[in-house]
Length: 177
Image (cartoon, rainbow, N blue to C red):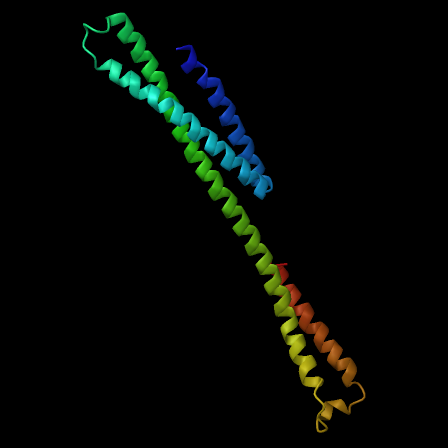
């Protein structure tokens, strides 16, 4: 009974550890944290492997006839078996929480990646029309009437600035920048 009772503080420790890992994963998901989740999951699995045989042993003792085990011992074993079932239940719950922490990590990383991709897309979209204008006016054609205008250089840069400003405002309103 004392061996089984000592598992409860240990389970409390693992519960607190998983809560700490969850809070840290929400704040800043990092590979080091996922290693911590993996370590806790392995340790919980190891605990489960040590508890399961005790639970099976007690289950077998419970089905023995009354001539082998007296009523007082049977009640004691029943209470012990209930504790072991409770511990296994808690371990299963913690294992599910650990799997949820993996999903939380991958979701957080995916969200972060989407934000980066959105920003990169906005920046590249801003430069596409500029690249086009530079490519067109960078060609050495002789018959481009706007090249001979005295203010064409300033018109080109004004067009570039207007296009950039319009796209930045558009992306800012959509909260992409």
